[in-house]
Length: 178
Image (cartoon, rainbow, N blue to C red; front, side, top):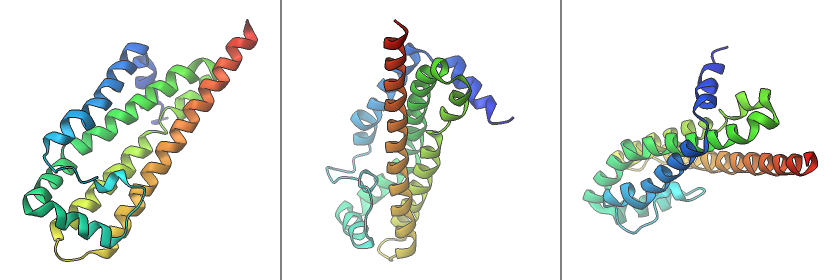
């Protein structure tokens, strides 16, 4: 099936050096690329689990016109690439652990982190629409943005739990096999 093609690509590239590279790239975004957009010290909306329309409008007002332009550019550039990078890191980590533990499941579970990408992109696009409409209010779009943000964080937590559970089973299997 079509779903196996990206999984096979991940399987072929899944190695510790690739994982380390992706982890370093995942650190590079928040450490270097996001601050380079110059949106200041205000915690971006997508780092909250959820937010209300009032919180969004306060945030956008605090950014100012230039900050809103910078924020929009960030959402449409580096913050579209970032979810791919960190989801790929999670996917490679899952594949490294699961391919020996659950070979058949690894093909599908390694793709789970890419649901985060979809949620993150919808979050970004919703926030871009709200930011471009500002100071006009768009409460419905804010509600969707917040929903996508919550979904993104929920999927991240689920992915990390799957990874940690897999590592625990893998360690237990290694101990049992000795």
